[in-house]
Length: 409
Image (tube, one colour):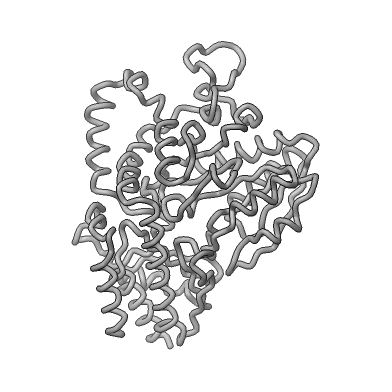
């Protein structure tokens, strides 16, 4: 392997102000992972998470039992939502709740947005968005008699303001896009797209699954109407951790989600006739909050607050720059191309490498302890998580990719 690239990785690790935080993650020496490059799918667990989970089970669950609800569990969806808004999403208090899955919250908000624009029947979305986003819009369109307006996007790039301007009109109720494209890593110009959609009278809904905890997000400043996202990627909430939903403050009385459950009621324990929505974003809740699933977020949000999202983004760009450098030097001779934005301002937190036959490398990579992500038909996603991934780890992982390609050639 190229000594200069290893020396560069070691120098970047030595100068990394977030480097010491890697020790906060659980990665015992006896594990078989030598390079984890899929932080954009599932984040590593924090050491503090195990302690918090144990304490919660032994003290709060076992000790307080049903009293835990009045001790504070009932407020966790909003308290954690406010913390998430402050630490990672640029949202003032009272606009975010943690609840449900991304799919369920997405359905609630798409349905609510379409209903909030009576007389308008078009939903604008792009062909390369994450499948759930597309499927949910198809379901809502079928339910509400809406029309889907598809924007064809390049799988190696993403949605642009010019495309949105050409697609929206006076009949558009909602536009829905991913802030960071799941396939290419394209970082959309959310503020400008919001401006264009609002000029046409439409609402905007952003999927933040590949953004939260990785890139700066300014929901309030950008004029975002609605947003959803998961907490198990860069926010390290764990497998199946609950999602979050954002509803801008001035839309609280206008936008009403369709799944009316007791936790979204004005007074949940009155249990009276008829549904009266709770004030604020709490009205986005439906059923009992997944309290146990929220416990890891206390630790991960503490760590993100300590690091600072600006520093996380700075390191993310350095990591992905390094991935591209290794791909150009090591992998391009074997037919690998970078299938995503090279420009830092348009790049999210992961890099997609494309080559026919990459799927055949997955098993041997896993056998060697290298774990990237794969997206059909031929994309290897490299998603180094800034808080838990070092540059030498990236070097090790892509070095093994190179070895396997060399053998096959």
